[in-house]
Structures are given as structure tokens and as C-alpha cells.
Length: 220
Image 1: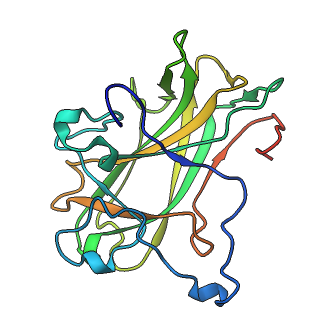
Image 2: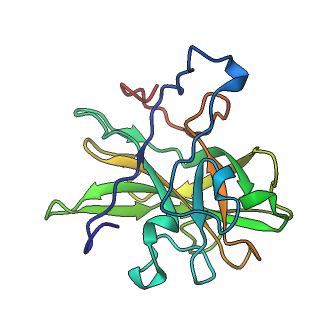
Image 3: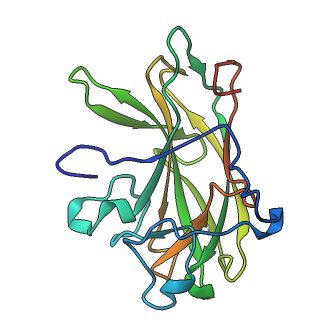
């Protein structure tokens, strides 16, 4: 969130893989700290990727309120490019997220994340509205949980989150976007304050795969 009800700027989901730094070997590509507005209380110089803090409340929270601190530090979002004109993206109700993660400072504790798949639409006033997909396996849930005890600690580890979902409209229409969000669930990530995630890196192939019968430019 920026101010009022204006959505902030999520990362853009690209279909192209991250490019290598030609001056370095493939296994020596640099790792960057993606966010400096939120840092671990100790060992901040060693953190990499993006740090996502858990909400002050337990449960899977898609839109933290402003009273919960800085919402942009509690939920991280990605958006696809808009669906091109004269096309639609048919959704078959299956998707898989592959993401690299670890705890902060190599600490050992359980971890639990909530993954949200959503459609970003514009309402009649032209204001973006996010419509989450409904989990087919958990009644009334609009999130897809993943947990581990312990959560990966010192080494970046790839996790896979399958998603079977319902989407009322059945397709994304021109101008709409497919969205992905992750949050760290407080009750299942104790005593840690949050978790680290690595993506957009040639050695850490994080990706969202969505089953569809559509062939759309930019989504092949």
C-alpha cells in the first residue's frame, strides 16, 4: 500500500529467465539484498533476497491493515503483464509455485507461509481490485499454505506449493492480470520474525506454473 486505498507496486512476473552476468561463472552469480527497508535485528549485512515479516496477527492475511505496521513488509506481490487485447487466459484450476527460501540468520524454527493466487481487475471507477482464487481443498480458504518444521535454515532450499483452485469467471480477460502473493504466518513461524525468499536469479529458478489451454503472446 502507498496512501489510502492505492495499491503499491508489485514485482512484474517475466516469462524470460534472469540473465547471467557474463563476467562471472554461472555458479558465482552475485546475490543481492532486495529490500533495505526491513532488515534482521542481527546479521543484516548477510541477508539476501527479500525479507517478509509475519503479521502481528495469526492466520493467512492477504491485506494487512495499516495498523499492523508497514503492510508492504508483510505481504509480497507479483503481477503478470496485462492480458493482451483480443485474448483471454483460460484457467483450468491448477497451478504450482516453486520458490527458494530460508530462515533469517540461519536460525532453526518452524515456518509457515500462505500463498495467494489472484486476478487483478479494474472496477467501474478504474480502481484495481484483487480477486483471490478459492482453495478447493480447504473450505472457504483463499490461500494455499505450506509449512515445514524446521524451515530451511542456512542453505537456500526450493519449496513447491501446489494449488487446486476455483475461479468464478473461469478466465482472465484483456487488460486483467494474474497475481501471486506470499505472506508469513505468525502462528506457524515461531519464534522467527519472518523468512527470506530468493527469486529473479539465474541459480534460483523461482517460477509460477499455471495450467491453461490458452496460447497467449508473452505467456508461452
